[in-house]
Amino acid sequence: MTFPFNVYLAALLIPMAITWVTLPLWVRWCVRIGLVDDPGHRKIHNRPIPLAGGPAVSTALLLSLLGAVLVLNYGWHVSGAGFALSHGFSRRTLQLLVISIGALVIGVLGALDDRHELKPLPKFVGQSAVALLVAAAGVRVTLFVESPTFSFTVTVLWMLTLINALNFMDNMNGLCAGIGAIAAFCFGMMAAIAGQHLVAALALLVAGALAGFLPHNFPEAKAFLGDAGSHLVGYLLAVLAILPHFYSEDSPRPFAVLTPLLVLAVPLADLVNVVVIRTLDRKPFYIGDTNHFSHRLIRVGFSKTTAVLLLWLAGALCGTLAVWLNR
Image (cartoon, rainbow, N blue to C red; front, side):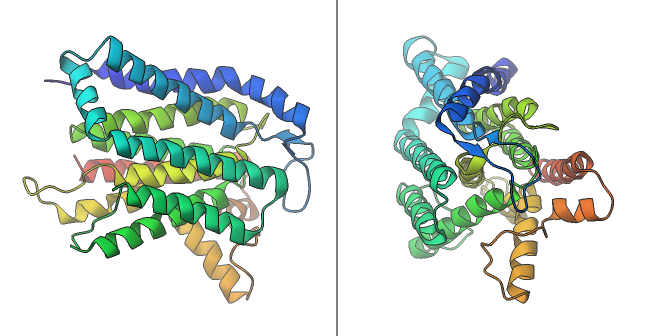
């Protein structure tokens, strides 16, 4: 069976439309309760910006998933693409439920940070709890090592790394959401090529939800993702990097398991860059500064918009190479 292209197109466009439509509603709600990012040190804006991106993206993903479940259960599960997706849902029901709970918790954690500026330790504990929950549900990195302890540990470390990498990268209009949308789209393409239809559809849902936010955030920001959004983006990309099977005995390509690192090369390299600089300067790695790739590009003469576009391009090139290696 050839999986119909229009299913993937719907998975991309429906959450995109929901985010785009609902974000102005979330903007008004954030302004009403005072959930805004005020100008200040290291900030690039000169007026309060509503932190509405996280709630809007979460709304799009939740409504899209609920709609998909209703369609599969009550109108499209007998044969063809509907059967393929229903089969995937039935096999991964527990994992998908835990992933959804984890997304909710990580979003709430980010929202609390937006509202109350949590200290590093409570944030780390919350992030760790979510990572432990997902790993306990069986969503794990393997890397050819037959050790549950190794797999569990690497999975938790991987998720903590990605959550914070994307949180760190949310330092310029459109950067975090754009990199997230590109990476999710690439994960979707790799899963689709491999015939992993459910994973591909989930990845495209994430890509679409983030793409729908970008017109409100780039180049001029009417809303920010906030920590609720950047935490969610990092979490979802970490999960999307684990869900697909990048290696099989029928088509052995050991290097293929490394392609998620290539898809996420830009945020991971940016994270390593700032952590090394802060460590050498004897500063806590979690204290923000202006040594990110985006800031460095501005210092050499590029505009903010051009700096973001260049990083999007780098992410797209790395992701395209990863898709090609998994073809």
